[in-house]
Image (cartoon, rainbow, N blue to C red; front, side, top):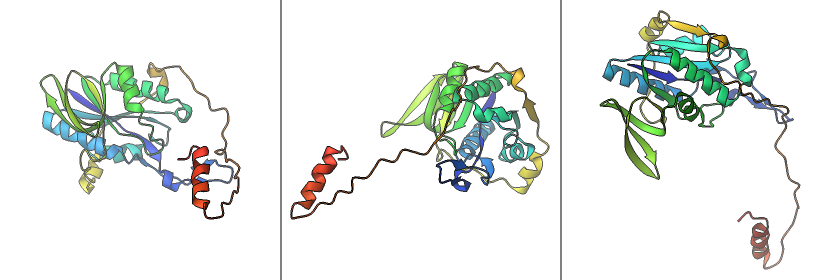
Length: 253
């Protein structure tokens, strides 16, 4: 059995700048593993250790995001090998296309019974990818997962639910999106970093995968609309009441 962990290498939004025209400048933003993914990698590694399974990292991104240095940083965290698709065109892909490619990478790996992913990505935070990958694979997907353990022919999954938690048992393969506090990620040591350079890294071309051809094109971008201010001033003994009435009329309260 094999456990796949889907990870994303993305630019850190804290390094970006917003111009006067509202456009985001990513030129100074450094690439790195999305801050939600170390927990997913650690969960996959702990499961792999418990079950004696191989842990394989899968990722889709630009050529820079799938470069050897970025792969080594993932391998140093305990992943046994990585399978990636690196193509600069992926920066314009829709979420459906990226999910199709991730699912196709998973299908190339023999014996995968669990896909682990982070709760979101540092650059978008849409929390869509795990569900889209699960849909493409035809596997059940579980979000906000705090714990996973093997159970008979499937998995026992604990997830946040309705202000509390619930435990689910599922037979067969599944996709789980783990919360950042599902475990404590281990920082790679020097030995881990040196071993990472010797681990297998497989690069896959777009032409080798069955990827959804649905496309989404961004035709324009612009700043958020700014409504005109009314500059109303409330005076007199009933100023507070006038303000409350105005806010209610504007559906603010």
